[in-house]
Image 1 (tube, one colour):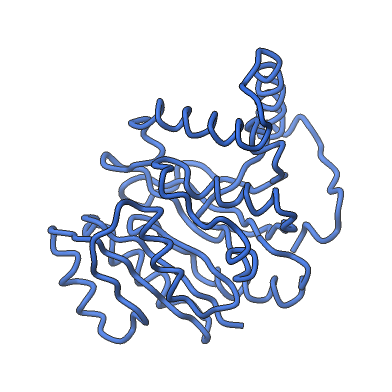
Image 2 (image 1 turned 45 degrees about the vertical axis):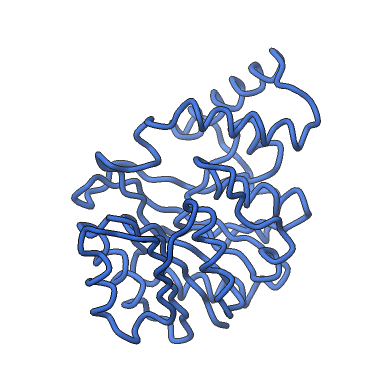
Length: 264
């Protein structure tokens, strides 16, 4: 089962080698690696070219943002399973082997969510993220937990989806996954740490720089799916899901798995 990974690279040379090596050093034979760089000027392109044919496809052309870059990258992908990793993040050893084994043994699963870590600029663990309960409703109300870097999906699910929304400048990944779920994609979960999401001074996500734009993207997605504006009662549901999450993290709420297929 071939796995295709797309990496977006734009002026992140300080972290880029870690990202590339974390993929190329996976113990997984049938790997296709695609990197998209729309115009880095910090030496990233020279580093990319030093890897030669270890990178299956290197796309060096301008784009209109991350979502368009990902669409370009996946248009070249030929794998049965897709995943994507930013140039400042990295996969953990053995991640792709676990992903490949999961999809082989769970043929009805379309999207799989794994655990992982949020790390600092030096790669030091700050906190663990344990994937759970991804559904349309829970996504809309913040009642799910997942890590994009540890999420993988079948080629068929991606081709049936609207792809990455190029008008979304903050949560193109979440919009893709919730659109898949809305179209009936079956989720699964790997109870293992697969990747790390790095937070640093120039991160797009996780630093709060785009908080207002992110909130607007979330409201737009809500309107598209629910067909109405956000209400006060929706704030209450958000609060209840947030309390649930706090209790779960504190170990005060025992959740019983609903479906055997959700566990690896």
